[in-house]
Amino acid sequence: MSTSRNTRTRTPLDATLQRLEQRHRVLVRQISDVGVVLRGTIGARMMRCGKPTCRCKADPPRLHGPYYLWTRKVAGKTVTIRLTAEQAARCQEWIGNSRRLDRLVQALQDVGLRAARAVTRSR
Image 1 (cartoon, rainbow, N blue to C red):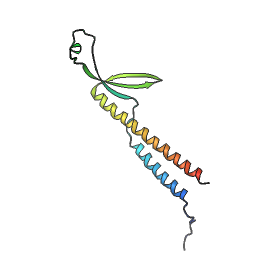
Image 2 (cartoon, rainbow, N blue to C red; image 1 turned 135 degrees about the horizontal axis):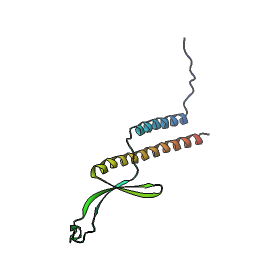
Image 3 (cartoon, helix red, strand yellow; image 1 turned 180 degrees about the vertical axis):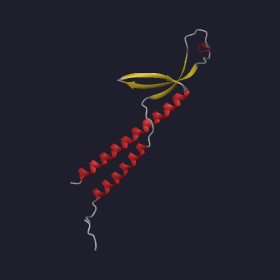
Image 4 (tube, rainbow, N blue to C red; image 1 turned 45 degrees about the vertical axis):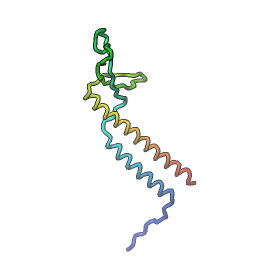
């Protein structure tokens, strides 16, 4: 006994959408591998103090630091927090994860746009 399946031929649109859905699945898997995410930037600064006879006022100056600063926006205002070197390294990794997540989400949106264009062109 043979089973009959609906064997319609695949259109170019079907093939395109199948490729885009596969790309979508790959991107979603990559998103699931992203670790902790953190917004902001980490900067290192060398600074002068307020003591008039300090080495940071010498010629040439020997500034204090580096001091690590995490800067981000909270409710439209810039917030800066001083970190240790170890904290800065950990936060820098998380900020990198955030940027990777942003790129992956943008790629997902691009896949969706390409799918919408393919569907709207196939009238």
